[in-house]
Image (cartoon, rainbow, N blue to C red; front, top):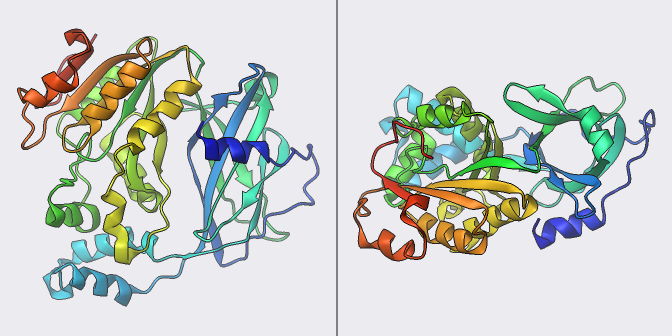
Length: 362
C-alpha cells in the first residue's frame, strides 16, 4: 500500500459492533454515492486483512449547455453531432460536472458491523480502511460470478430507503494475477491523437481491441483461475462508462484501479497526461501486497508501459513472470525499443504482439 493509504489506515475508525446503527451517513435525499471496487490486502501481522473503502458523494446536477459549450471548444459543434453522439457525450461528460459534496461523514455496514469510513473531501471522495480478522473475512466473503468479494452498504438516514452498496475484491495470498492496462491495451482510445482521444472518450461507443476479450476469457479459464486487476491512469470520473465497457465487452471481472484527479470538464483531457512513474508505483503496490503471488503484466507501447513493466520485473524478479505488450503505430513488434528495454529479461518472459494472441501463453 502507498504511504497515503497507510496513513489512512492508521486513523481507521473502529468498528462499532453489530446492532449499533445509531451512527448514520450524512446523505441528503438529493445526494448519491458511488462506491468504487477495491482490493483487500493482507495486513503485515498476517492475522488481519485491510479492506479499503473508496467512494464519491455528489448531487446529480449538471448543465447540458456547459457540456455542449465544452464540445464546441474542442471543435465539435452541436449541429455536427448525431443524436447518438449527443447522448453519449452527455452520458460521459456529466461525470465531470457533477456537484461533489464535501464534509460528509459516511458509515457503512460491513461483515455484520458498522464502520465509519471517512469524511468526503473537496472533490467528494472519501477513503478509509476497515480491518477484519481472517475469521471475520472468511465469514463475510461471498462469491459473485468469478469474484470473491466482501459486500457492504451505506447506512442511510432514518426513512431513506435507497441503497448504495459496494464490494471489496478478495484474492488468495498465492496464485496468478493478470494486471492489465485499459487504454490502447484492451480499449481503443488512441491517446496520442488528440482528436481521436476526444472522439473515443466522449462521443463514440467504447470499442474493444479485437480479440483481447476472447484472449482474457481464455486466460480466465485456466486452472487454477487467475485474478484480474485493471490498472489505468484514467480518472475515476470515467469509472462508470469503463466498467460498463468491461462488462459489455465480456472481459473477466476484476478489481479496477483508476486515478483520483480533481479535474473538471474544462481540463478533462489532463487526465490522460500520465506522470512517468504513475503506473509503476500503482502496480508495485499490488505486487508488494501479495509477495506469494505471481503476476502477468499486459500493456501497450503507446506510452511507457514497456519501461514501467521492465522496471517492475527488475524490482520483483520472482513475481513478474510474463510481460505482454501490444504494438502500436510507430512502435512495431520489431522496434529496437523493446530489445533495449527488455535486454535484461529472458526472451520467454516478454512478448510484443500486433494482434491479440490466439493461443494461451505459458
